[in-house]
Amino acid sequence: MYLILHKKPYRFNLSNKVENSKTTYLTKSGWIIKLTSNDKKIGFGEVSPLHKEDLKKCAKQLDMIPEYVEIFNLSEQIKNFHPCIQSAINSALAEIDGKIIFKENYYFDEIDKTAILLNPENVISDLNKIKKRQSNIGKSVTIKWKVALKNNNEEEASLEEILSQIGNNIKLRIDANGSWRRNIANRWADILKDNKNIDWLEQPLCVDDIDGLTELNKKIPIALDESLLKFPTLIDEWKGWQIRRPSQENNPVKLLRELENKKALISISTSFETGIGKRWLYHLSSLQLQGPTPKVPGLAMNKFPNSFLFLNEAKKIWDLL
Ligand SMILES: [Mg+2]
Image 1 (cartoon, helix red, strand yellow):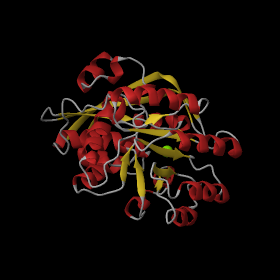
Image 2 (cartoon, helix red, strand yellow; image 1 turned 135 degrees about the horizontal axis):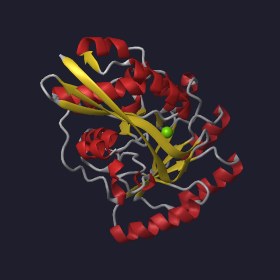
Image 3 (cartoon, rainbow, N blue to C red; image 1 turned 90 degrees about the vertical axis):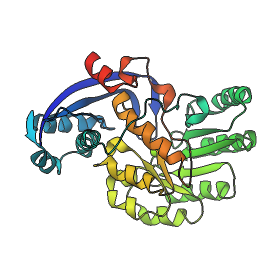
Image 4 (cartoon, helix red, strand yellow; image 1 turned 120 degrees about the vertical axis):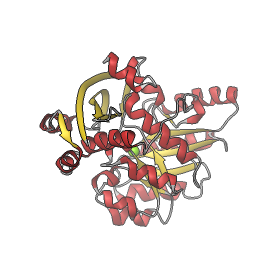
């Protein structure tokens, strides 16, 4: 089968900044791609690198792919390319092959359908706002707090205050983005290990400290995020929660199959994709919710500007870009 590859770059400003212990996101750049097969089937994909320093590499590799390409040659050529390029091509091929069939609507717009990111500068006042909104809708919500941005004493004091303020209908995820040392991670694990509100501690230790993460996981649920990106074989080995990012994995069809086969302890997370990549996030998130360990996804819904880039129709986004 022959394919025609077209690509278009995009760039947008997040509606407000997203800060973690390693980086601050203000803008997002990437490409959307369109593959057309010789029998006129179309698949869209998105190259959405999380780290700005990967953009140049992705640009260079995308330019190496010919516009007209035989499917076998394409699959061979991208094998050593950046995971985000592989993800985009494999997503588009899966769409052409009918391995994934998107629905028209997925309903992740309401506040209680995804995790809400706390503003790390105003954690407590943000929490109070969420509680106020929550009392209006009367449903459970999940909040996510990015830590290791301030000194630990200050953050532990905020933790005590948060714990004293949340009732049973607020779930908490705490993400250190790999920045804690073992002694700090153990302190937090000891404070939180019997708490019913905690979903998990996310990547508390650095990506390489798998022994430390394994030990912690015996005490409290630990979700791996950055470790899975650096060591993808952990996807089949880690006995705990996994934060999964379809746009960062070589082939999101693997993740699709895992969810279709009801694999547990998977949580879906955004890498700030446009509406093209978001189709995968929504589809996988809705499968996750039908699985054995349903948890709302982390889609950072309140961070996206109002733009055609986030429409639900891939073709419209392509035509307008
Ligand atoms: Mg994370």
